[in-house]
Image 1 (cartoon, rainbow, N blue to C red):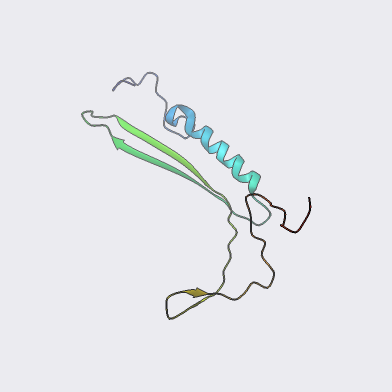
Image 2: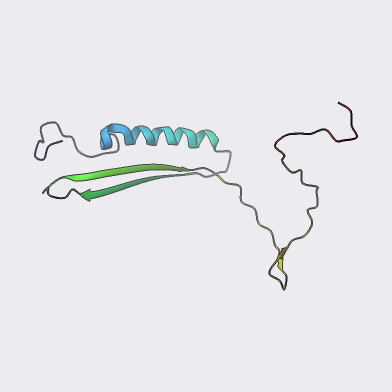
Length: 112
């Protein structure tokens, strides 16, 4: 866009910013966020706009935009105790926690 050519310009909005790409990104992120929300959960959508004057021009502004969706996280808390040598000790889990492995290998004493 050349400085001073107002004949093909429209007012700034999400649907016109960055050639309409910002509105499309917002809509896509809203759909993705809503598809993952469960009852009672919250998500966030952050739209970041950065406006800066373009050097050596009198009226031109650079518009940088970004959209970030914050998907729900499961929050957990626990307690631990610090030892004298700065290690952290926690209570044993009440249930045996299965550890994830990359590949299941049969035990040495089991036949396939």
